[in-house]
Image (cartoon, rainbow, N blue to C red):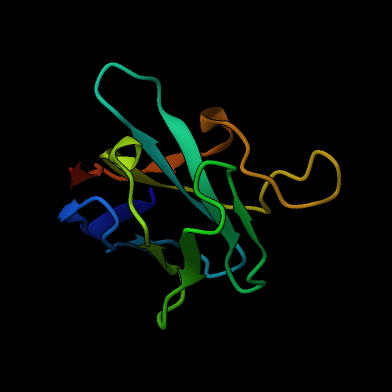
Length: 131
């Protein structure tokens, strides 16, 4: 069983920045696909960004590309999401997800995939963006 633990998050005003981190305890420190999803109240969970650990390939959804940066942390199987120029629509619960293999590559390039593509999930951490 892989355990994921998120940290960071919090509250910020529009235009501000926040960072969320995820640590994954896994049996084998091979390449894993780690990702962030988010869910706003009353809305479906949506993908944010993904990274293939060890390789460093990344993917961003259109909503966050250019504003968010996903990166592997100093420790293996850790990742960070730096969120800049935050907007009210970025608020919600942010969930760390992991699958113990490559990220989806439907057309060859690394992609986000769907929730069902990920096996393990964290408990989530709150991000609040106020105007």
